[in-house]
Image (cartoon, rainbow, N blue to C red):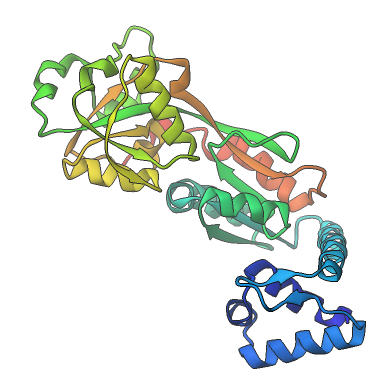
Length: 322
């Protein structure tokens, strides 16, 4: 039965035989046959096939709990064996949302790989909820995000501090009155927006303008809403979105004001279609971190990557020429 363990676990994760079969590179009939054979060997039914999506039977819940223990031990064993190679070998699975996977993580991975060519790194892009679940199930080793990971379940390592700003479509007439507050990419590169003498705009000036916010449950969406309420108004939301970069691009099309970060402009790319303004509030700062599941075995490859990113990778990015 244990020979079918990973097949059964994949069906459990997907709650669907067809999706699990595609992930495993099997045909759906072949996977169904394998799972039925495992159930026959054990003398129990693991999946309740009368529900949609599939659910576990009581015996199935016991089986999956044991499988997760076995998979964790297997994962830790491989990590320890790789450690014996003294960073000549190893494998790290890293996840991030759209912005981190597209702009920040490639910088870190490319530089680290030149120093440790024997360590392979896989990069996964997904929504934060999916990334968190993948961390807890040991499908991922590390996740990069600005989310405040619950210390009961995760261990976090601060990498960078980023500052929330607003991007206002340049076509909005209000910008003409705010020229002394506007920031250029050169200002941000030289960190002028961090100086206490550089003026911050009052969000209340935009109270009548449409906003582009991220959906509930996203840190930036909730932070943006709190910043507006702190300024004395509830924003008129023209559109709810899932990704920070998407809201930025739509703002550049003149459809609303977006909350962005200085790191987006430094690591992504600036646009002339928006005016950028500093926001002054404790809520306008947040940490970019790497996180892994609490109490998991940290391989030498993971530890080296974390140390490298904390000490070297992003140190000079504020002067990045775009």
